[in-house]
Amino acid sequence: MTTPAIALHSRPEVFKRRWAVLGVMSVSLVLVVMSVSGLNVALPTLVRDLDASASQLQWIVGVYALVFAALLLTAGALGDRFGRKGALLGGYAVFAIGALASSAASTANQLIATRAVMGIGAALIMPATLSIIVSVFPPEERSKAISIWAGVAGLGGTLGQITSGTLLSAFSWPSLFLVLLPVVAFAAAATVGIVPNSRDEEQRPLDLPGAGLSLIAMGTLVFGIIEAPERGIADPLVLWTLAAALVAGIGFVAWQRRSPHPMVPLNMVSDRRVRIGLGVVAAVFAAMFALFFLLTQYLQFVHGWSTLQAGFANLPIAIGLMVAAPRSDRLVNRFGTGPVVTGGLGAMAAGFGVLATLDPSTPYWLLAVGMTLLGLGAGAAMAPSTANVMEALPTSKAGIGSALNDTSREVGAVLGIAILGSVASFIYRANIADTLTGAPEGMAETVKSSAGAGLAVARDIGGIAGTALQDAVATGFSRGVAVAFALSAGLTAITAVTVAVSSHRETAKAPRQSPTEHQALAA
Image 1: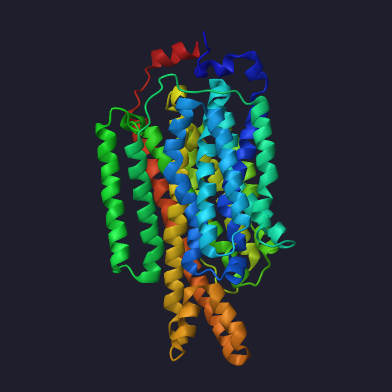
Image 2: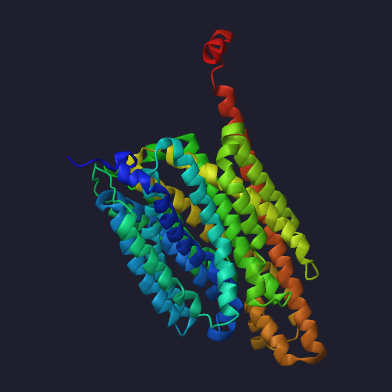
């Protein structure tokens, strides 16, 4: 008789190598997350080398997360049905093909297309990593392992920028994709050698209509959000795409209710721990990936930092994550999940509040204070929230449970980049408009398209006029970034209040123990 996947951690040969499996899954996770954030450092380079517009820059970053998020549920279901190890190895292959093609792209649109291929591979990889971890660790160690996994997920965003900055200081931007290939090869070889396979014994049919509806809903929503600043919110294309997103989203929910084999069984998200956990993960990643998208551009465009300097500027976030995430499990055991997550989100709100004060003259030490608070807060909030989601679901559904968690993570990331990036772009355009009064129409449109393009025009003009335009671009872009960070502070603060209220209500509903019960427990 075949041992069920739920008993994997009971096998001596699997139990002995569980920490090695966690290491391989962590490398795979870093590979995926680095590819979301690492390209942010290269955005100014892509403006110069590929003549990318602000909208194309957002799509170069956003299409990866968009395809990733849209396919995660399907990928998780595939892993549950056909085997999570197979899904992982297939994801490595697709990811490597996309990375190789990205390194050879010669236009911004080509890079958008090849990044989408990478997103497909990442969608197969990421849910498999967490579901395998849940399968190989016994219940008493599972929270600790998930905390490490969640910390690595946050750390990968910072490591991506540091790695990219280092590579760009010595090589051209294609190196950002070529460097991924040996990492993929190592992860694949290690997976073949030490990672056991697991699957859901129920073998549910795949929900193809649900997958199609979720892809349409997410794709049209993000397209509309990204294009709104370029075309205007009243543009027919923007309105039609947002309407299509609404219809597809409603259709997805309706289909999940009536389908005999739904992609997302609604009873899985009825648990309060799952709902709150997914909401926290989405909010944290929306704020953090908007930060990665905007802060590196601010440091390069406004302060004139190199790609290497901008990459290493994110070290305070990495330090905060490394301190808080591995210790979050112990904090939860002592204080409870609600207070720890609320405190983490509060620290994030304070960090974004610090960053919301930036202007062209803001010193780096002040930014470092804000980023340290962000790292500590994200580490404290993400790990317990992810553990809550996974512990509320049966181990046999680890793939779809992981995919739900990862979908909320990536939906948050892509919407954070799209919405807050669009807000920053809108504020920049509004601030630069007065400076461009009387300028030739073609030049004005170029300056409005992005801060990078505006600085390029200022350099071409030169002299007093060029310096004045450069100052206006820096001021306008700084104001846009500051407004986006203020909104991030509000988002994390509102999420903190929501978690605190929910935790208080849950505590109030809990039955009180009588003195006799306390004495019995003490005995």
